[in-house]
Amino acid sequence: MKNILSLLFLSIGLSVSAQIGIKTVTPRAKLDVNGDINLRNKLVVLNTTDNSLVQGTNGQILVSQGENYPPIWKTLRIPEYEPNQFYLIFNNSFSDRTGVTFTGTEESSTRSTRSTSFVKGSDFSTFNNFKKINALSQPFQVYSTDSKTYFQFETVVHTNFPANGATDTSIDYACGIFVDNKLVNLRQGNIKASTASNTFLTHNQIGIASNLTKGTHTVSVACSRLQSYNTNNATLGIGINVATNIDSFIAQSSLKVDVYEIPQVFNTILN
Amino acid sequence: MKKIFLITLLLGVGLSKAQVGINTNTPVNTLDINGDVNVNKELRTGGTNTVKGNAGNAGEIFHNNSDLVSNDWKSIKIADGQGSMALFSINTVSDKVGATFSGANGSTSPYAENAALDATWTVLTGAVDTFSITNATNKVVFTFQTTTQKTANANSSISYACGIFVNNTLKAVRTDVLVGGDGTNKIFNLNATLTNLTPQNNYSVKAACTKRNLNSGTLGTGKAVNTTYLNDDMAQSVLTTQVLQPY
Image 1 (cartoon, rainbow over the protein chains, first blue to last red):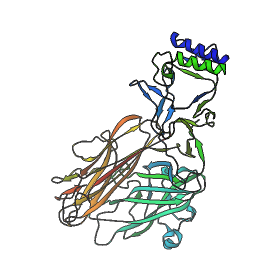
Image 2: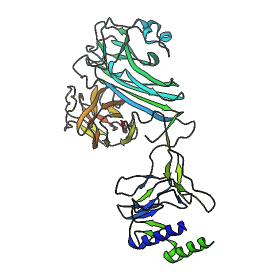
Image 3: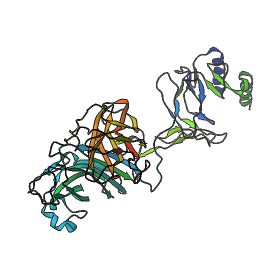
């Protein structure tokens, strides 16, 4: 009998445009259902921009548009995770304009044992006369034990060589990428004097680290002057100018850090 | 039995085409509510005459699957760590037009940050893009690569610079020198990071090059100037712009 009354009430509502209550006599919306609702078919909402009725395309979700507007079907723009695939989780990039400089006497004694000292995992303290580029020592986060971390470093190497004479005037240098003060990747190079004074070059370096522990790590870049040939007094600058033919803006360093992970822990998208 | 009969009768009489309109006389769906709906309990989907509809699990989202007759509830999750500082937008543009320089030497002075994009610079017309910043905390990363080539004999080196201009002001630049005989070419790289640009729609970014000391030779940036050793495909320039922001 109760059901019939409700339906009767509903039928009355059809003509008087009042608010309809189901299991309530004080409806607070055009249709106020004091209980659950079942949809055997699709929910269709009004698109107020063109007055069309929309049931959403495949995969869309219903999103509130706030007071006075109907909810709207939207496509969720986040990836669906496939198992055993890497996803870009952390990404950051840093720059530095102070760099590091080396006089002729600041050569690394580690050069004599390059091939045995410059090995992956070696501690920064064992690298003699390596100087860290200040603003590139930065924290990054790893959230999965199955990860790859990609470092892309670029800087300018500059010297105040005079114009080249007959002999080969050059300096060997090296830059290492360290994670938590352990060597990940090192590249060495050689900068030569030429017919023009104050030569410079662009140094590019890519390093990777796999399966770092979960948590916060610190990346740093440290460079050193390894060996000088036919020059004792030229200054070497890495990420900084040492003569006025270029400036610190041109010589700035950039370090990009990307962490790809196979996600192991998931969070809901809600807060 | 009497109850069922009465309800059926009511439905048949009161409602045309078995559709119910609330606050409308012309319903277009089974239930057409011209107004808001208040739901005090579960919103269920997919019920039948015998089975109660699914109310979803806590945290699931109302979803449309076009393969199903009714809506369903979907669990959507993101990997731990996503959203701290993340790739917000990325685009790559390329250019095969390049720029050619000859004649008088250009300035060999260093370049200042925020210098204007003036006539001494030639924009690589394809290496032009736009990006938007929506968060005050942001990083913009540029990766630019091109090939440069010189003419003239081995005794005359050619120096040049290529830079990245954002809204026509210089934000990153590297200089380089080509040394060698006619046709000598070289890969030029520029990677730069900008921090915390002011939020704005449609920043313009342009890669442009300028001549420094030509020593009477001809310089091509992103352009072959001696086609014995290089063509325009090989000399192509690429500019990638990545915007990193927290969600």
